[in-house]
Image (cartoon, rainbow, N blue to C red; front, top):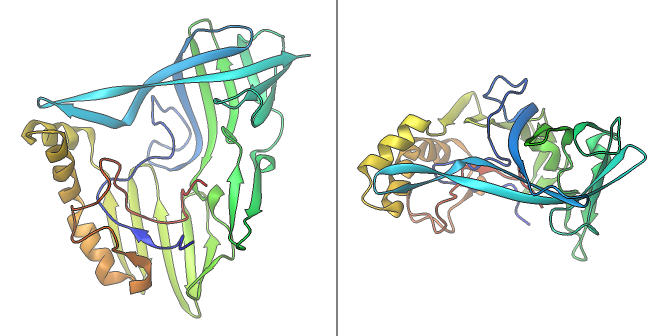
Length: 282
């Protein structure tokens, strides 16, 4: 598992939906308390469905940038004022628990245990190890009304990073919720990613990138002839960042297997630029 390689292209995919955020992170952080509000639908005594707009997954059609709606169903149960929040895929899957004041779903529910209890270090038969967390492990509070659910998460991209992991002599160390450090002897590389920016530092120099704004995406959509052309235009916005990284970082951090040159990524539209395992979910 070469988790430390750079997978390079222009856009950065968020690890969670960026709906109407009103958290304490000032809107630019990839970490901290982030609150998202969804529409509550199809509530029963065993499950509920919530929907919202996925801000980072718009699509371009006939020169107009349109939003995609996100829908998710969660299985749950309530016993003695304790809400058991089940996996979206099966009620028999992973669960987390919340405490409330009634046995009705409508109301405020607060997480009973720290999110770290929902994550474990796992190892496969080849000796490769990674951090695995339960689904929705970072939810700290949920507030239900008859028509909405407001979900607060302790969002921390480096929850998935294993301290002390080694790749070709580079050792991984978590700095904070947004950043990791890679060290080899006296040399250090730091990489920080928020919801809107990336910065890589090495030997006193740095490369930085800001993900396209809504205005830039709308402009790209107006210029595009089709959906593929739209993503190509966004790719080119990050071309200088890609070139900067290639000149800045040691070659072992660059993974060019799927890239002949910038903008020719094998996978679209969710192209990425990051040092893994930062924000890597296993």
